[in-house]
Every structure is written in structure tokens, then in C-alpha cells.
Length: 333
Image: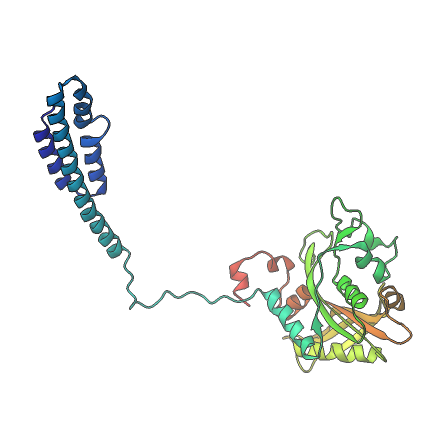
């Protein structure tokens, strides 16, 4: 039979000698685990007579109580020591200066978009937004784009699988149509957002790009109002000495339509014109499709490519740089 007095002395000595919580756990397993001498002594009680079994049971209980008391006390001591060591190791010296973290800033496209919106909000426009997955009704039909127009083909437009008449919007003009069908004139809104085309990626093209389109609907609106608005915009964004010119063009949803150029003068003394946007008077067919009284109201619209403005203003020659998330490029702006 196990000598419980000797076993208790050894167990208590091992508890006292444990240097950390892992050592202490090994001591517990050694002296009180399923394969310990204590477990063997408990199993042997069945072969003892009643008096001996009683005395043996009392001795086993005394051993367990003594071991548990010593174990708990040592566990508390080692836990406190471990906590103190961790706090010391993780201590922060609050007197040290903080590490220098470079300040963040909005992406270049976000900066340019906000600048554009600020110009038009300052003129009294408000911001309107709409869905990027758009019905063909708003994206094409209400904008005077005929059913056989090349823009409707899959080589130009991205259609949503499973939906015959749902596309990723090719411009933000559907937002203008939504505003005209929901509100009474006078209307003055700018519509920012992402647009999508089935374009191959190269230095000047991307299947995803951003636009800000504007719309004004009111009585007695003329092409002169459009030109004055765009001149104020160009001077706010590119410089107070800039001029603009309007060249005849064609867009299905405006008539007459124009490409708008802004003047520039290079560092080498060269000067000329850069195309920045398209614009025109809202086509009467669009007004009728959106429920606007064309006999009473007229309007103008314009569309600005945010990437194009960013590239012209900041000398970016490859549109892919705007989407590469290269911190070295982004840190320049």
C-alpha cells in the first residue's frame, strides 16, 4: 500500500518548488492524476476490511485537502508573478514621442470629384444619385437613344446576367431622367457616380470610370446660360484666365450638342485647347419622355469625366495609375 505520509511530503515539496504555472500543472497530474499513486491507493481500498478502509479514507481525504490547499496558494502566487512579468514586458513609456505616421488623404479622383461638386453646389445645384445597375428604360429609352443604336450592343454596354433589360449604367444621365420624372421644374442637379463600358483597358480607357453630369430645367434657359455656367466651372477648376470654346457635336439626348474645350498654356510657351466635357440643350424628345412640358420649359445638360479632369490637371498620362493603388503614386497628390 502507498505510504500516504511520504507521498504527501513529496507532493507538497513539488508544489512549493514549481517555478511557473506549467510546472505546477505537471505536479498536479503527477500526484493526483488518473495514473498517480493517489489514484492507485484509492483503487486498492476495496480489498481492505471496514476499519482499515475507514482509516485509509481519512488519510486520503487529509492528503487531498493538504494538496489542494498548497496547490491553490502556489497557483495564486505564480499567477500574480506571471501577471507582473507580462505588465512589465508590455509596459508603455508614455513619455516617448509617438511614431511618425504619414497623414492620409482622399484619393485623387475623390479630391477632383469633390472640387467639381463644390463648384456647382456654390452655383445653387444640389447633388442627386441613382443606382449603378439601371434599367434600359432609364439608361436608353428616356434619353432618346434608339433601339438600334450601337450603344445598346454588348460590345459597348455591360448587361446583367439573368435580366434582359438591366445594364450597368453607361453614364449618369439616367439619374437626370429619374429626377425629371419625379420632380417639377425648376431643376438644377449634378449627378456624380461610377459608370461602366465594355472597354479594353489601356492608357486612356477603363471599363469603370466616374462622371459628374449636370442638368438644369427652367423657363427661358438658353445656350448662353450653358456657356456661362461652363466658363465659370472651367475658371474655378483650371484658373481664372482660362477660356472655353464650344464645338458642334452630336449626343442623342441633347440638341444642339457641343464638345467643350478649355484653353491652356504649357510651360514651354505652347498653347492650345483641351477637350474636357460634352454638353448641349436637352432634346425635346427627352423632355417629353420624362413628362416635362417642353412648350414651357427648356434645359441644358453636361457631362464631365472625373478621370479626364484629374489627368489634365495633374499631368497623369496613364489612366491605369488612378486604379493601381500604388502608394508612391497616390502620395504625390
